[in-house]
Image 1 (cartoon, rainbow, N blue to C red):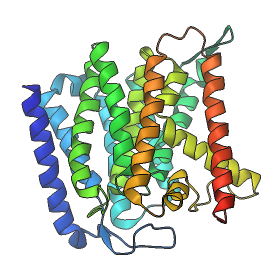
Image 2: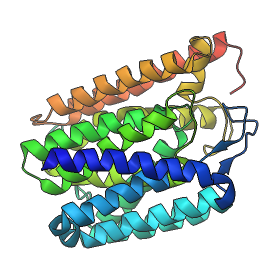
Image 3: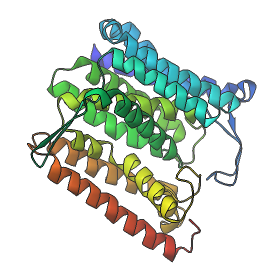
Length: 335
């Protein structure tokens, strides 16, 4: 029965995205290149409308008990999905998207999906208490934005999300958590169908309807997975988007720029130049990196003290920063 469900999800995603691609001009779902774009031609966007819709409908039809039990969380997902659709059609101010993500996080809280314990660091427990909800809002909005920022090359955000969802599906299966298992598995299969259209050269982009929703759902499952994995392990599972965002913001602050100022100095931009503008090679390399980080996070599920893991994570961020800085200098790139 599960195999039939997955086949239907894959086929439905193909059909939905094909329809959106054909009707993109009519609905204003066209990405127009600018100075920060990696593509040169007008390209349909909004494929996220297709694959997110399919997953939500699949959960309602095939896993209605899960939908009913976590109704508030799915309402939150729907809010982020809605603002993403609106942004794909009309372009939305960043503040509006931020407000919606914060509001959606409140719905996660109603389903008790909240970060209230950060683990143990060198013998000290990091319980958040009253700070749990504000920190959860910060974490969810931060990761949602991080995945949105790394959506800069054909197939990149979709591929990295598949890896992360695969880890969540394994966790859900091992710990008999149907919410994590089915949401992760359904998104994973739907994204595989999306990559049929989005692998380089892409015929359609996911848009914010896809990247914002994926970031929010991954953050939601990541928080829920803290029941089974230490918080620092989750940093590795979702590693590359987080590390890229930290490195970029740190570099901007050191150079006196706004941490939120857009540029073409993310890890995928730097590596694309390093690989002679070969998008497939760049994305494949980043897929391997994310896979390594995700496996590390999964393997350290029984760590008693998170302090050493946190040091290891920060060392990885530092090494990535130094490596990227050296490549920026070699490429004479203005960052």
